[in-house]
Image (cartoon, rainbow, N blue to C red; front, side, top):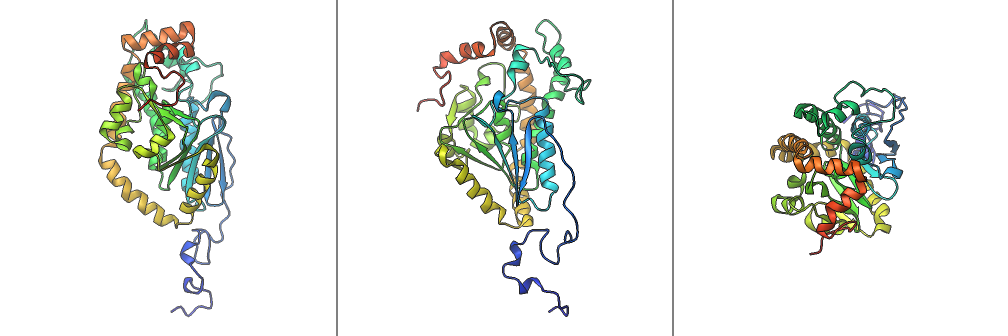
Length: 340
């Protein structure tokens, strides 16, 4: 028993549910909140009580991935991870979908060219001009320049897996191609029944660089999707165990809030220990090795005869037309899922 007149945890009902910053014993008791503002090029960040909300904010481009996306995401995730007031990190997208993959209007049609002036990626392995030269079908391809670039995207996206705190991805509309590289790194996926989820670029010009499909779905179901480039619906994702929950689109916001609020009630240290313990099994499966191998093969797939044919076709007739020609033989152009 304490001799102090100060209230002890035993004097307070359910004191174990207090936040790290709450209660007289908190080491943050007299500390102010962090004081910084940051504008992100591809997303917004908001702390809402115990929930950090990271929202992709390029709806006019389907929240497509640019060189800023992985750096923005990693910074925002670390910001939430360091904040003792945050218990859970929610990632979602504005507009019609979660993320439509890489900005292929830039990557395919314009050969990585950018109209923007110099910034922090200029002159680095992420420099769009450098990668345009390295992706020239008439030139010489250096696979390690390609790997240095793509592995940085993976590093940023995998911050969702390696964060100490739980991460939840809310999917609606579509999570396609590179969008799945982001979503599959999250600890939990919740989605609308009609969400389109898949990696059609395995038909040509792409391998999922994150390498997470087998870890999330198992060998056969991952191969079922990647051997065909087929997509599944959010409902199928729940049935196959890729998503923890699926629901009608009009219920997604409410169901997601119920999930993250339930997680947020848990003490941060309990959440961290549970995640670290469970991640130890996932990491032992070779997640890092899968990502390395898949990133190398993703680069190779964009520099085969077929990959160059797709790239030059997209540059000639536009990316949408090249995708139509790619997908129509499978009968699923603009369809949400394969027929079972």
